[in-house]
Image (cartoon, rainbow, N blue to C red; front, side, top):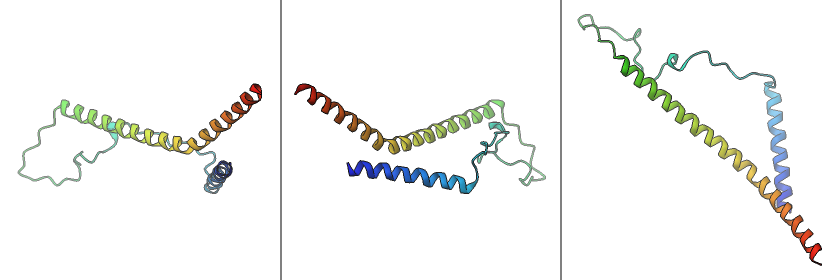
Length: 124
């Protein structure tokens, strides 16, 4: 029972600490940043910069990449971003589950104990 009370007290302190940090940062009414660029506008590490690369005088003009190659790269980028977002969401959900598991276990135990007492009183 002391462990349950200690866990709840610890959780309350954590929530108070988080609230005080939020107040210190002063971000109570901030809105999330808006995405103003599309995925295609964001440069990738695999993209070659065209304006900053030195151009050799005798080199022939490079042939433009086929549209299919660009489309494939875009699709690969979107699939990679999708995988990263899913992994991040799964990690966040696991953190939330880990945070709330002790509270859920405590509540289940409390309810089972109360039900056991009612059943024992009824059987007497």
